Amino acid sequence: MSKPAPKPPIQNKHLISREIIAFIVDRRAAKRSPATIRYYQTELDWFAAYLQQHKITLIEDITAEDIREYLIHQGLTRNANGVHCSFRAVKAWLNWWAVELDDDSWRNPIRKISPPKISSEPLPGVPVDHIHALLATCKRDRTGQRDRAILLTLLDTGLRCSEFLNLNYGDIALKTGAIQVHDGKGGKDRIVFSGNRSRREIIRYFRNRGELAANSPLWATQTGSRLTHAGLRDMLQRRSARIGIPPPQIHDFRRSFAIESLRNGCDLVTLMRLMGHTSPNVLRRYLHLVDGDLQKTHERTSPADNL
Image 1 (tube, one colour):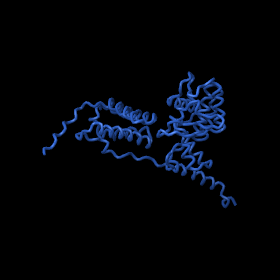
Image 2 (spheres, rainbow, N blue to C red):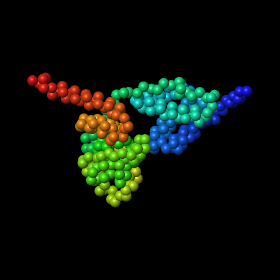
Image 3 (cartoon, rainbow, N blue to C red):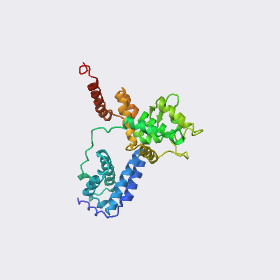
Image 4 (spheres, helix red, strand yellow):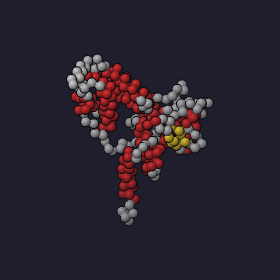
């Protein structure tokens, strides 16, 4: 029995820009969440721009060394977890391309790259005194009232950025503070809660917006359109600049929610459900920060030391 003829060598015609688009289309067809799609799009656009600067436009021309140098480049402005995010996106794209191409003559360069190490230490959230200072910049005008409600609700709910910005007016029950989250991570719905203080500021914010439909965006611009990730980030940067503090990342409020909830006695199972985690492993890392608080408090209040 004769052996099948070998496949001809790959022709250099696979544009990086075009195949990134094809990958994003495939992820959408696979019903990946909007947040996941944005993650892939952002990370791969950065990778493509870097390769373009080095005059690499075809997938076949990407080498393992190119990827290593890109990750080093990312490490100049991003922490270890951010570099790992870059690696995962590039790996997912190239592994998808290997299946899509189905040609043994192409060697996937990602196979030679070891995953970057990530930090096991949890990042701190927004310091409480910074939150007080940010709130102090919010006047009682229309924009200031919106931003005050945003800051408190970010802290009070621990929502991911996409979950927070996708909320509609009909998703919040003002009497109870229950907030319905639709299509969270993994496409799952859940309920979170806003406390009395944040709910009071939300109600004050609504007074400036008139009558709203159930599907009206909860967080809106001056023209009534839905607030975007860029708009929320710009607000935090603008208010931080007024008081001379480093602008917090949006996700820092989620970390603050976890840390302060643990400090105030919330158990891990409840916190896991509120934050939409399927495992308590990530949250357990925050216990180290809380344990540090307990140690400092005991050092200050030790009955034996204060005899």
